[in-house]
Length: 403
Ligand SMILES: CC(=O)SCCNC(=O)CCNC(=O)[C@H](O)C(C)(C)COP(=O)(O)OP(=O)(O)OC[C@H]1O[C@@H](n2cnc3c(N)ncnc32)[C@H](O)[C@@H]1OP(=O)(O)O
Image (tube, rainbow, N blue to C red):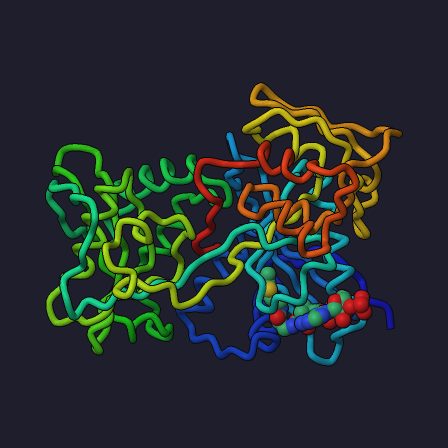
């Protein structure tokens, strides 16, 4: 029987959701389902149909992704699901092909996702471009810091009223780092909504929002957190203009009465807390994982659109099994004023797969490390070091939550 890849119309969104719940082994209650439905109505929906049955489903959100020096249009993949009866027959491969055609048709040079399993997406050209840390703070004693926290007042906001204060701070932070997705009003509404009755957030307590700064002035930082019954403060997001503002917010979270521990699941590897904490036995990294996976769908446009920290003139030999337009030998000439990238017959200085170029693109993964790992071939000694210097960014890329 043939599988037909086509758009999933609005009338089939519930069926697509049923398939996603089946593939992910989840039971979604009414509130969760309603929210997912809303999200999908605004997303691209690619379906794999066998006759009229949906056997594969992939959604893509149209977003902007921050890259060094700016932002590029991106497809964020989500809800990728294949019926257990149809797995390993190329259904996902067919849907990815359709997504690449759509990205090309409307000029989206990047795709990204949060993977359910690490082994799936490398073959499609995605590389782990950001890293997130899980951090725990033992707060049975006061948090000791090596810097003086910002002394401005802290105030709690009702989550429903917080968007206008939080969104500008998020945008400032996003401009500093690659890997951060654009957030529209609907995103904030979903993120700051009262907990779903059927969701599992409630076990960590209701969401609280604390803001740093004088009442009538722009805020200098915020934290979204929950306090669970067992005395654990779970930090969902913390944004701060500078280190003293971050210190004030971490100190606040660590000093809430009747709590013993602060945990944060998504902390950037260069978060200042990891440096200004006086006692790293008290502030511990207890886990790390690739957060967002990135795919350069249009390598030429991606490379010429980002900013470059140092001059570089190298020939890259790129392998790309899914998107042949990216494959071949290209000369990259870049410096802080801009970049060009075009085909060449000259010999290559570096040979690499698009998944490894994608991993390094935001400046979070060193090309040299991938040479040492036997993944990137350095044909001209020193070429990887030159490319690393040009790719370098002031802050590491970081992606918190997806859509
Ligand atoms: C961004 C997100 O939404 S992440 C969520 C991903 N979805 C899930 O985890 C839900 C449960 N799993 C599924 O629905 C499916 O198994 C999927 C989507 C992961 C894979 O779909 P399939 O249609 O089976 O993939 P397809 O047949 O196109 O496989 C392509 C290749 O990837 C490999 N592959 C697929 N899934 C996996 C996996 N989980 N681990 C390792 N390899 C995998 C296949 O073996 C195949 O390799 P080959 O080309 O060497 O033969």
